[in-house]
Image 1 (cartoon, helix red, strand yellow):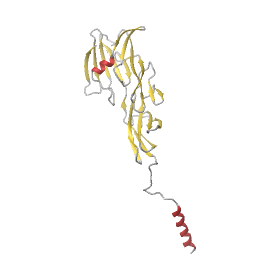
Image 2 (tube, rainbow, N blue to C red):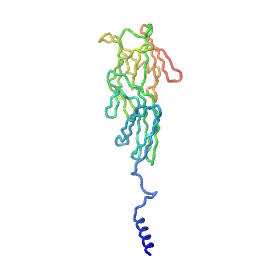
Image 3 (cartoon, rainbow, N blue to C red):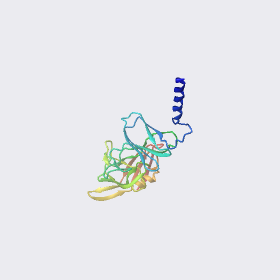
Length: 258
């Protein structure tokens, strides 16, 4: 009788404990977001926003190793961005800025909306090239250089972390002399045709080449997910510029009268 009574008391105790039902409302429970980073990644800035605020602000030292990270995020939807190669840029809130006088960094990035309304969600990082390397040569010279100092100007000074959209501002840089021939400089994704190169004589502008208009006339796509590099050959006496765009089906080349 003693054992029967003890058994009944144990059953009563178990019955008193609240049970979790599969029909329980779990809408307030977070979603487990799994982010898959590629092997090539090194140092990555990882951010995530929901409709109200930034909910993840993480920097990962991956050292070229494949990595999977898991984060608890609110249910609903969120925007995930991953950015690599941002060293040399200045972080200002949710914007990356190019210091004036400096070239753009060799930045790879991706951003996408992710549905997080279930128990789990996945996002595979797929970095895209978000800079343009411009190789510039002046014809008629064995070195590809010209007798003027060069100053590159643009009205794009960075990008938004969340959307990767260009940020309006003052961009200036001096092209570097290339080890191969001519000059080389790196610019960010452009918004319009204001990109230009000033030919300088001391502090005075001798002439300005409206490079943005010339690139636009070649059909270059600044809205492409991955930006292609550009080779320019300028013939000042003839007023001609030859443009070759790598990364397209080609490469694509054209000559434009300036």
